[in-house]
Length: 253
Length: 238
Image (cartoon, rainbow over all chains, first blue to last red; front, side, top):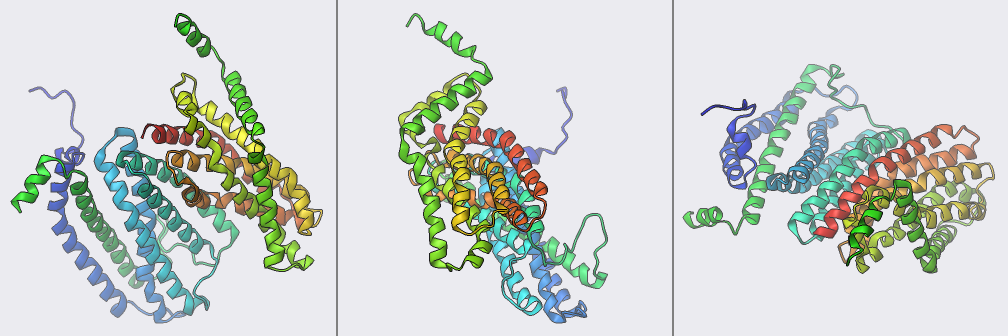
């Protein structure tokens, strides 16, 4: 058999497009990811709470950064993933991409809530009030609203394929708007400290402080992967409930 | 049945400008015949404005301080409320499907529909705004900023709102949903719009704000009709 073209990606990558294979591949990945998540989150939390030095100004109250920053980063990344998955579903009509986009929305919304809550708890000792109309808090709140809009639209449309396509369009419109909203809100009012991690510069805090933060961020990413895979597997089963392999799977167990 | 092919060939010859003008005229004529749709957003605008002195404080100095924000928020809500009707009647009587099936580019038709909608709401709001500014004791220095920012900002509101209208046109309960979808996207326009009015009131240059509003409008004109067209195709076929 002559190979007409070189394969750039391994075979399992193409198999992800089929709900059945995607279900099985996710099932194989889940234990490993869960273990890594557990180790990273547990280790990172212990490191952050017990061994990282206290801030010279904020004392121990700064330690909430180890929850606040990862959840804020993840809430934004999750929107990107949702929009990209939506676009893939819209363009190539891949069912699995639609399901990924749908599973992303509730996870992203809850991460945005977590970022807002930890921000409020951190704001009380630092700024003296639970809520400040500051640029970054406000843009996180708007991100939360965008998630709510996507979820509301998805649940309002009965036909599943129409709902997936409509939410994909909305997510893409939101993706174009996120930078505009971010910068307009930033010019409007800011009190918040600048971002902790930048790709181009070294972090301003000492290594003993940002190393556990990095561990926590990676841990949150793997946690997100676990949560996404669990939701995705449920979604696949729910949508493919009439197909033969799901019936077989349920009867065997 | 004989003349069907010739009809189609004539239709294909319609140029982009002629198509735009034809769609614009049709929508303007339709909304001028339904006077209530023209007047309702304006009445809503006026009523919301009236609530603020009643609910907050009738004191002139305080109202003048509040005026830029109140005017912009009310204009935004008035546009939003009128948005639901943009594609609704065309969807109900089936003409929207004909528009989607026609060989003409949907981008142009959608742009014309949005332009007609803006003339009926955004432009009217812009023209009424100075009067309401006076009622809210907005200093006369702020008027040019108010007019210009509304003139540049309300078309963007119509363009973005049309995306929400297109996404929800197939649903029976579109009203509240459309505000959930669209309101977060309105925030940049609101920030720069009120910024322009406040700068004008304090005597600062407003060019920067207007340039930003113009940039948002340019982005909206180029991208929003694409999203609206895609959303309409999804909503109508689904």
